[in-house]
Length: 282
Ligand SMILES: [Fe+2]
Ligand SMILES: [Fe+2]
Image (tube, helix red, strand yellow):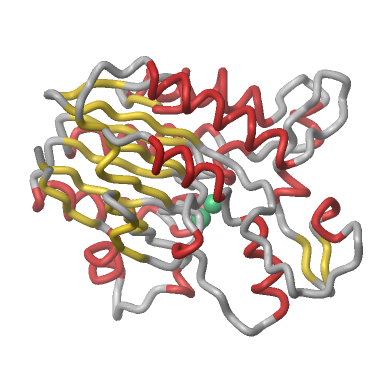
């Protein structure tokens, strides 16, 4: 079974020329399954048009939500549309409409391989302990002149109009992923999360702003969950826009993001897309 894997295509920011190039590249590698591990597009219209464009390029299209895909606005929130509504209602409906399978909504078996996935979230287990930050910096998302945009645009309501703390969101989504894995009656499993699962996927840099943002990259507890399930052979993630492909225990941990245009290390869109689409033959 051939998988084509990417993430962080951010079509609302990168533009539809990226989508045309990605479709051409996916068709060229002829995968059985295309997996996009989140940060597809902010906003329902672009999210849907992106999936509709990708859907005919491979026999199966599997996606997980990214943090940008569940962003909401004060106006939408006043109508009850928080990030849970995006994750549990809006994105599933858009995926059904496009003929894509949203792994956040449930696992799927293709051939004899099980696929489970989740947006995941971050719980500060990846933070840099030696970084000197004010006590409320991680709760407010503010440090120096920087603001982590999820604190502005992602809002997981606690049921009483307040935002859930990030570690509570992470724990809830991890519990869902565990349920999805338990429902899979397969000896081989592929997991896709948007946020990172392993320390070795976190890119450590000197700059303080970068060190601060690393706190929001993912959860080491997700990595523990993956390591504990001996059926999992491939763990896909995104969120960081820095690619990596490494063996962690018996798991191949793959991050193959496109990222923002300004981050591309390729001369043009075709080259950037070619780099960002990993091909794995299971
Ligand atoms: Fe991203
Ligand atoms: Fe992300």
